[in-house]
Structures are given as structure tokens and as C-alpha cells.
Length: 49
Image 1 (cartoon, rainbow, N blue to C red):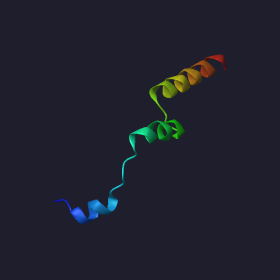
Image 2: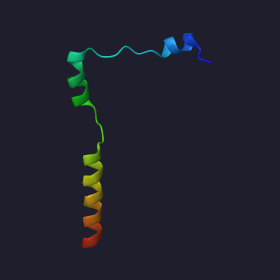
Image 3: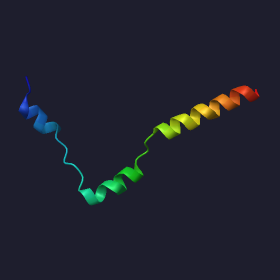
């Protein structure tokens, strides 16, 4: 069962819509493109050694 008092304590206000772009741009997020680039880089380094 949910403890509403505890859930209220954990609540964090969401950003205003006009501030979301700036917040996302400043975050260090690894996306699928980064993962694929690193995998390709590791695979090519392995072949050349």
C-alpha cells in the first residue's frame, strides 16, 4: 500500500516547458548513437592491433 506522506516528501516539481530544452542540453546523457560509436571504435581498434 502506498504511504502518501512519504510520496509527498519525495515529490520534485517538474520544470517549466520553456526551461526543459536548456536542462536537457546541459545533461550528460549517453544515447544509442554514443553507444554505437564507442562499439565501432573498440571494434576497429581491436582489428588494428
